[in-house]
Amino acid sequence: MAVESDCTVSELARRSGVTVRTLHHYDEIGLVVPSRRSASGYRLYSGADTERLGHVLAYRACGLALPEIAILLEEDSGDRARHLRRQLELMDSRVTALERQRAVLVRALEAWQMGIHLDPEEVLTVFGDDDPAQYAEEAEARWGDTDAYRESRRRSGDYTKADWERMRAEQEATEAAFADLMSEGIAPDDVRAMALAERHRSHIDTWFYPCTHDMQVGLAGMYVADPRFAAHYDDRRPGLAQYVHDAIVANATAH
Image (tube, rainbow, N blue to C red):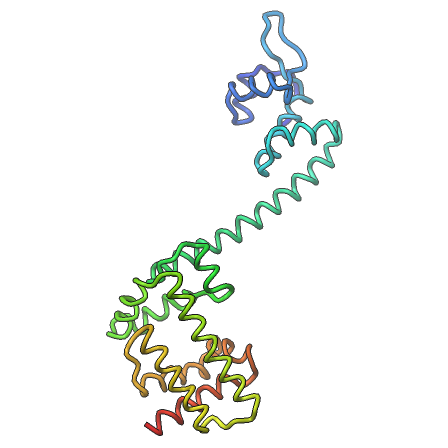
């Protein structure tokens, strides 16, 4: 924001996008002081003054307070390159933080739209890195006109943070138990594996919608056919998606 010649406070305000009142304040606190005054007493800002103002505005955009900026300007007086490098580092950090917060807000909005009525911090606390709404649009497109989908939305709309935490804990415990059985070499049609499959079905039935064994088998098919669902289980233990599928099918057959 350099200028070729001295400019008045009104001209600098117009060029910089700040108010005349702000420039007066900066002058009063010694942050950006005009190098000289006209014969009529008007403030006149030199090229160096406008460069200093540019640093002030850049640091403000990075979130720094005026006292902090004053210290930095005095420590590195005249070192433009150092100021610019620091401002870029600060801005990059601020952009990263804003992008992270934006992602949290997007997840919270999507979760709200699918019936998870939690604030952004609660969504992050309950679900962590798992995006509860990553398949929301797809689920609505595929099952939006079904009774099961409508019932799931109805129930989940009333859940509190504590409810979601309890649901997640139950889900985690069941999936961990499946992984333990697989690690022990227990066959998926063993009574213990089938009991977990029944627990899995009961979990859905309790928390979301009435889930018959046939419906559960349909879900199990997605666990192995859809790479996204398969990864959810296989990231815990390779082959777990197929194991859970087989246990669910065995349990449904037994019923």
